[in-house]
Structures are given as structure tokens and as C-alpha cells.
Image (cartoon, rainbow, N blue to C red; front, side):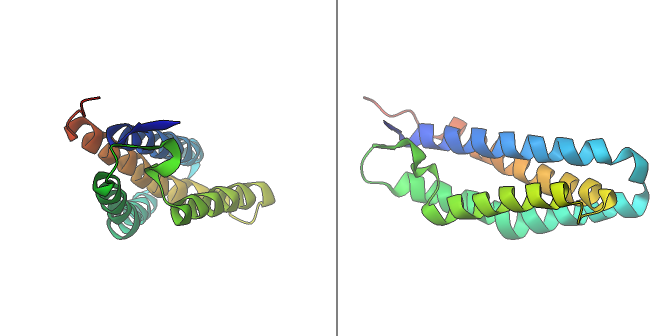
Length: 139
């Protein structure tokens, strides 16, 4: 199924927003028992590192790549490249393993997942902003 380049930006927005919301929700649910200034500062640090060094760059890279496609319509999964899908699969698998195995203490889940989830959610929102600002293509 082929979609417009603009729709690819919307798909990226939805995928990252849903993932970010779910991870942020898990972190926030674990947070009440560990709510302290140092933990909040650690969550902000996790957010900043992921947003500025990983997800912010990822949004720019994929938006540029999508906009550079010569054909106006692309296969709907081309909102990411293969490498990004693999990274996402490793992150999802690793996150599930950490929680299910009990290797990560609840405090880690609260602090890390809150920062990571917020950064993922912001990446989704940024894709959404690019979607909104992308001109509609005539059919």
C-alpha cells in the first residue's frame, strides 16, 4: 500500500507517540514511591540525553529522508529505514525483558522510563509538527 510522503510523517508521529505514551505511563505508574528531587533530576537528564543525542536527530534524519523521496507515494512502512525498525525492536524486547526478569529495580523503571518515554513522546509530537507543516500533495 502506497501513501503520500506527508502520510509517512503522520505514521511516524503515531508510532513514536504511542510508544512514548506507553513507556511514559509505565514510568509514571512506578514513580510515586520514588518521587524525590534527585530522581526527578535524573529523569530530566535521561530525557535530555535521549532527546538531544538520539531522538531529535532521528526525527530530523527521517523527515529529511522522507521529504527527499523522488516519488510522491511510498510504501507505508518507509516512514523508517530498516536500521530504525531493528533499533525499535531491540528497545522493545530489551524493555520487556528488563521488566519481566526483574533485573531492573522499580526505581530504575520509574526514573529511566519516565525520561525515555517523555523523549519518545516528544519525538512523536515533532513528527506530528512536520506532518502539519508539510504541504498537501495534489493527487
